Length: 193
Image 1 (tube, rainbow, N blue to C red):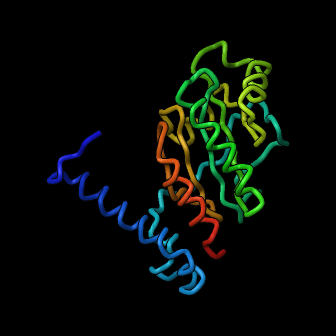
Image 2 (tube, rainbow, N blue to C red):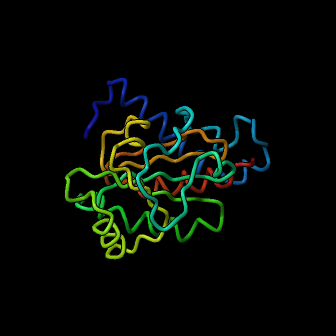
């Protein structure tokens, strides 16, 4: 999508990208400046509100049931996907790598499998797709769209990054922006508290 330089969205996007560049350029500032300082890289991220709890989950795969309340203190990446979506399949290698690389540093990746078509609902089909694509992180089977609706989500794939205090600090819909998303993961992991 191309934005005209005179449009308000162009200015908003430019301001956001500038704040992200500044945040990523100086990761040591989070510790030097303290958690409430405007110089903190995490402070440059927007606060998009409290993250909704996982709700209406039919089954948890690769994990016991999780709640955001029990994950407080960790950075959480919520990845809405469905296994027949080619865009989702293309994002999974990135999501899998982030789970593997950053889980020891305080990240928890939770896939929320919300089916688009009836054949995507059976657990056996989801499990087969998870094996095929190397998904080893927890996956919540959201067949009734409870968590999907709680997030007011409308897209596959959709990524939400939640800080250690349970606030949504970043969201991205569709493919791409992998470096940017990883930069936000690092920024949130480096934030004190």
